[in-house]
Length: 215
Picture 1 (cartoon, one colour):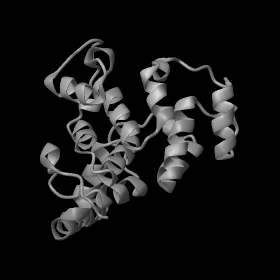
Picture 2 (tube, rainbow, N blue to C red):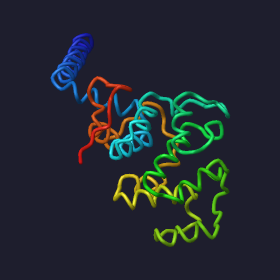
Picture 3 (tube, helix red, strand yellow):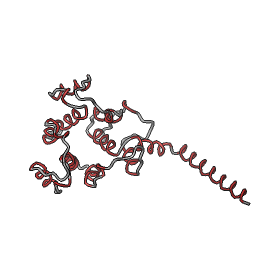
Picture 4 (tube, rainbow, N blue to C red):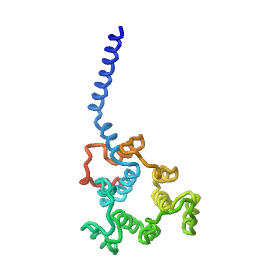
C-alpha cells in the first residue's frame, strides 16, 4: 500500500515538472523576465530605466556590462574615461567612471547640486547617520522630508526623482529599500515588471542594446 502511494506521489511530481516545463516553453518571456530580474539588482534596474529615459548609452552600457560592480583602482585611466573627462573638462584620473557618468548626467540636467557633490568629493565621504548641515536642511525642506533621516546623496536622489516624476525611485529611497543589501539572484514582482519594461526579457541583448526612446 505504501509503495503504491509512493509511486502515485512520484507520478504526480513528474506531472507537475512536465507541466512547468511546458509552461516555460509556451511562455519563454516569463522565464527570461525572471532571469533578467535575477541578473540585476533593483538599484541597477532603476539606473537602467533612468539611462533609457535620458538616452544615456554610456550609463546603460556601464550597468549592462557589469562594469559598475568592478572595483576601480584610483587613478585608472581608460580611453573611454579620458574621452568622457575631456568632454566634461575634468582630469580622468581624479574620478571613477561612475562619477564621470554622474557628472555628465548632472551637466545635461543643469543639476549644479549633484555636480558640486561629485566634483568636491563629498560623494566619497562617509556621512554619519543623522548628520544635518545647512545644505541638507535646505534641500530636505524643499522636498518636505526630515534631513536627519537621509544622507545628502539620498536627498539628491529624491530631488532628481521628484523633478522627473519618477515615483519608483522616490519610493525606493523614501522606504529605505536602497539601503538594504540585496541577495544575488533575488526576484520580486516589481523587479520582473521593471525588467520587462526595459526590454530585458528576451535573450539579454547585452552591451549592444541601445536604450529605447519611448518619447
